[in-house]
Length: 135
Image 1: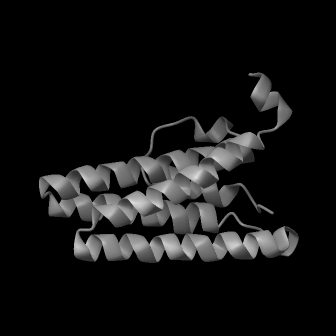
Image 2 (image 1 turned 90 degrees about the vertical axis):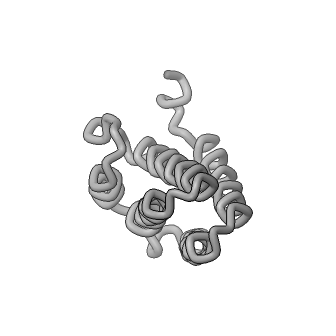
């Protein structure tokens, strides 16, 4: 379902989130992308409530970048079939909702995207390779 791990590495490294990306396996990279997107949305919400417009926009842009160029780009539509199609559409929906939240200063919409990401993140954590679960 997921393609080359190089796309998530490049996306994650380019957004400036500090981690040990070079040593992470593909599953860990996706986990890091989820975490990075959630952190960016949390920062956007904080900046939105504090009236920090530039920082809010930057945080939302970071979340969109992670979702689009990390999570969505890592989907393998050839092997993932219907699930990849649905996840791709969900990532597109999240991106649109983040743009709406930015435009309207809507914290409820940020919360909606955060819930969606959290559910996917939790599901992804459940399918961790057995060596990762043992660690």
